[in-house]
Image 1: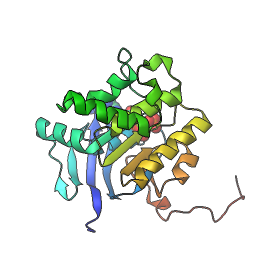
Image 2: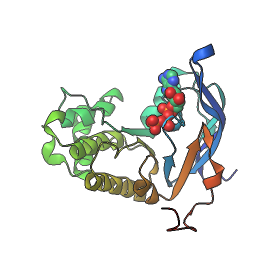
Image 3: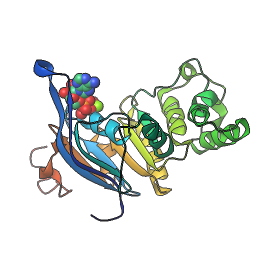
Length: 240
Ligand SMILES: Nc1ncnc2c1ncn2[C@@H]1O[C@H](COP(=O)(O)OP(=O)(O)OP(=O)(O)O)[C@@H](O)[C@H]1O
Ligand SMILES: [Mg+2]
């Protein structure tokens, strides 16, 4: 394997439920991501995209297979190791922002640092840096319900990057935003990627996906190889 892979997912299976209610969300998925790459993950509803992203982020375990991060197996058996991995390496952004309603913007972004035991003075410095980077500093004292969707997503991204993780995972980050706002959020991910972050975005939006370096398509819990060659534009204009 090339040694610039940050993530290697090998033959991972994940099943939810038991017996009659059993759902095979991932059926032996193989996939690798290079360091510094920006990838879109697409596929129909229920194909296993969020399950895959949650596993990559160390938020969910799997039944069989292997997950290597920078060539080392991620230890899902130890909660403390897993928590350490998540806190150090992963920034996660979701569709509906998942901000804490009764904390203001500053406090929301400060949360991950508090969990890490960072000192008060450093928290202030780093939170203000993140808010400045996301151009939302003037809303530091506002509460989530006083912000627009786009502003809330900026805050959520600030919270994801405040720990300075190498990996940014986003599950339909533009799904709840109008087109123009979605585009500006997409630009933020590109800027983070330009600064060296590895970015994986699950999206239903072809426009968002096209702006990524690579598109992976998931079908029924595996990578849909029929798309792997990249450009599918040979028959442009025929049936569209
Ligand atoms: N916690 C769970 N319990 C039971 N089944 C689940 C759970 N999470 C996901 N599933 C099932 O696993 C399959 C894959 O779900 P997943 O959320 O990964 O799909 P997705 O590709 O993200 O879909 P969407 O585009 O709608 O978000 C689906 O059939 C779903 O119903
Ligand atoms: Mg999903």
